[in-house]
Image (tube, rainbow over all chains, first blue to last red; front, side):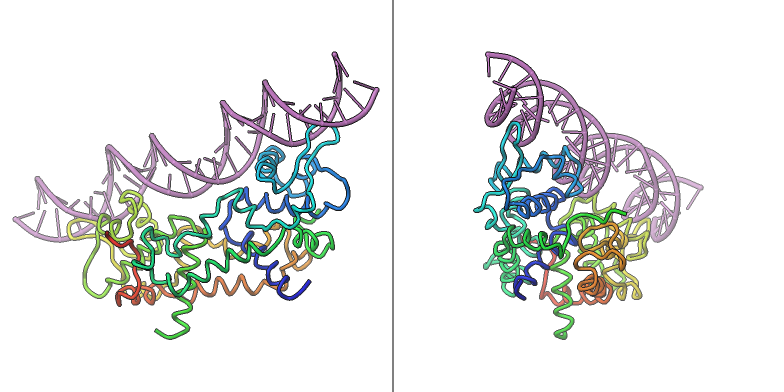
Length: 166
Length: 166
DNA sequence: TTAATAAAGGACAAATTTGTCTTTTTTAGA
DNA sequence: TCTAAAAAAGACAAATTTGTCCTTTATTAA
């Protein structure tokens, strides 16, 4: 993992967890996607129960979230026996921002920094010019970090997405 | 305004507005407190309606928030004719973190970075050692920025807390 | 073709946050 | 003392988010 990737990774985790920028659903969604992606090598498919256990979320709620992810083609699903959820190779390259978009929409990346409705070049908020870049960098971070790269770290065992079993 | 103050200010605004780290109530509360503090020089008192208009929040909701601020002695209130809300001098030195604490509690500054319940020195999350400091710095930023300093900027007219009237 | 399995869909329920309204209490001034 | 003004208090309502459950649809294998 390069230094840049490392920083990228920390940013994602930090943004996704400390801050309530994204909804709870979105956090679950990111965790679920990363888990599924981390097991994308084999032909394995994962059921709702297993995924829910893995990300420590309520099964029924997890199912709902997985449906959304599937609808947005962030993960792939297969019905029937031996069915379940899995990641296709191209999906490993999807950006984490796609998940945010699917779950919460992209407005979080586009709102005025100070929450003013008429913030524009004509009527800028105090930070409009100085920090228009920051917001874009934020979005870029999400856009440049792939699900697959986070999944790789998880596979290595260097990070985890669930609590320690006592 | 020193460079450090400036950075401090931007941090607060950024944290308070972009990110949903703090609740909507808390954002209103910070805006209200800063407004009231910005007019703390005279013997003026401000009524709910005026404050609500200033921060562009629903009056009834603003009243509720002001009660909380008053209860936590972040602002002072006086009932009856010529009454209203105002800031005492010592209250200008209160940290923005006091407002967060009053509205949302301090748990936001104390939770594990990755949301794990059993995150500790014994069972650290991937970021426990590397970023325990970040969380504290976050809290420090809130603790070291006073309501009065933000109010001073507002008085100068270099920043604003409400939308432009078209 | 049928039975079993697992996701899809969508109605419903609970919890939380946001917001409103009415009544009570306090204060100032006539 | 009486009246009016303004906050305090708290019940109530709406909106949003979170979470559950039941029925339908698609798929596999016997």
